[in-house]
Length: 401
Image (cartoon, rainbow, N blue to C red):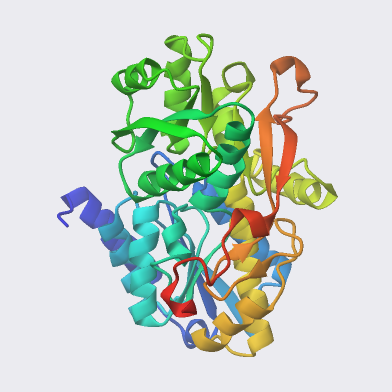
């Protein structure tokens, strides 16, 4: 990887700012939040995920095993090589014990491979590919919040069953997009639907016109947006300009969060069907957490941010239960302990590292249906966790063979 002088200087500054260790730091627990803080996924997780992790550390009490809990953060800029450079520095020099969030599937897969070599725990929240706990699974790797298969079961399955039986995909041209397209396409075909085609676009695209014209020309009943963040927002906005929805085709946001709906506004987003693993206004626990989060950020949390709270809190509970920060012992406890917090109730972690909980199928409200700020969703269905995710044995994870 070639870095410009400015980027290199910034990276060196990051390392210098976080590389001074004290004996307490070496003995205590240090958590790293590695994600996109300035690019296409900045609202999706970004600095909001950092604040959520900080809340988890505070709620835990700020200490574990008699030592202070520390946190470091960095922006990987959606570059796997940069992410691996930062993670290696954190592991080898700064005594980071666990890395979480890890937006962007190519980044998550690369850091997970490094974590396996370093025998360190990573908990992926913001990346979606089901390969993380499938063929790319590792002994110390975990996946929280959602994955491409669960999203496909939720949104793809529901729309196909309700008459949307022909699909065309608008797909982000990297690991996440391919995985979301494949997993959703498999669900569509299993329900008797057909995939008429797909077109791939670069990450962080600003002009979707040629891709949308191909999708429109396919005459598919559903156009599946196998992308996320600003790419999804831009695609939805430009689809409205082309009259795609008014012309009778339906848009499916295969990975949309509250952040993207907020960015679009209800006028543009109304009627979109999507699957999420968390919604701030779903129950008393989610509302209480969201109100605390809002006071700190002036935004309601997305499923990525709430999931980062949960992954951080669950890791600290596992360290306490194990009585050590040794990765082997902590990984074992993560797979034994139930996940009960504002994000998940009755969650369980499979042998392949997949945290299983229910997801929810939502439709974005019309502006006239919204009764208060951030009141964006109406729930259509619960997607049971054991239906959304395969068993560890059936996941393709070599550790479970």
